[in-house]
Length: 290
Image (cartoon, rainbow, N blue to C red; front, top):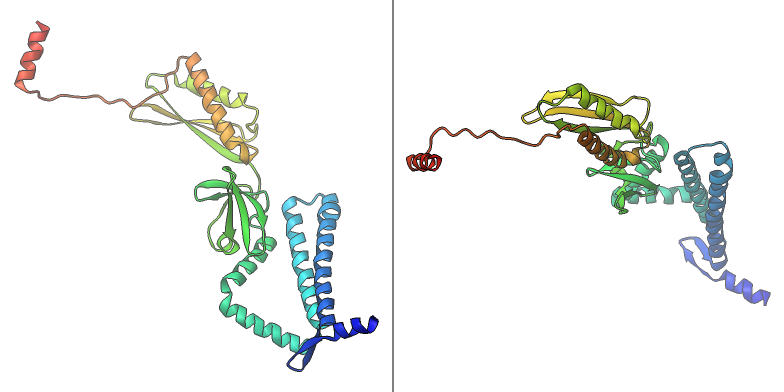
C-alpha cells in the first residue's frame, strides 16, 4: 500500500529541466493553505487582542492587518514555488518576467493594487470615514486589494477603484475629526424685529442637544434681500452622520418658535406698475367705479 502511495506521489511532468510531481504539488498547496490560515490567525490576534488592548482606532487596525495579510501570502507563495523545486535564481527570473508581463497587460490592476497600499500607508481615507461622492455622502466600509467599498445613506454599496481615490480629489469629512458645520439660511419679512429674530434663532440652537457647545452657535444678519431680511444660523455638530437630523430638527423648531413670536418667514413678492392701459379698459373701469 505504501509503495502504491509513493508511486502515485511520484507521478508528474517535466517543466523544462524541472520535474513537477504530484507530491510536490500537494506540499506546495499545503504551504499556500498554511499561509492563508496563518494570515487569518495573525489578523485575528492583531485585531482582537494586541491592537484592541492598545486602543488603536479601527482604521489603523484594519490597515496593519491587511499589510500583514499581504506579506504572509507573498511569503507563502514564494515558499510554495521553492517547494516545487524552483531554484531561487530561476524564481527571480520568473518573477521578473511576470512583473514585465503585468506591467504591459495588467497596468490597471497593478495601479489599483499600489494605490491600495498607498491608502493603507498614508490613510487619506479610513474605514468608517465619511466622504462626499458625486454630491452624496458615503461611508467607507472596506479598503480592499483592488477597490474600496463605500455605502451611501440609501444603503447602496459603491465599488470605487483604489486609483480613483488616490489620483482624484476626495472630500473626507471625518479625516481629522467628526465635527461638521451646519448652516441654516432664514429669510424674514421686512419690518421684523431683528434682535428678536437673532434671539429666537440662538434659542433654537441652544435647545438642541445634538449641537456642540464649543464652537458656539452663531447668527449672522447677512443682507437686505429682494423680499426678505436674510439671516444665517451656523451651528457645529459633533457627529457628521447626524447633520441631516440636526438640520431637520432646527427647521421644525425655528418654524414653531417664529409662529409663537409672530415673526413672518418671507416669501417672494413683486410690485406691478402699469404705465398705460387700453382706452376701453379705462372706460370700463370708470363705469364700474360709478
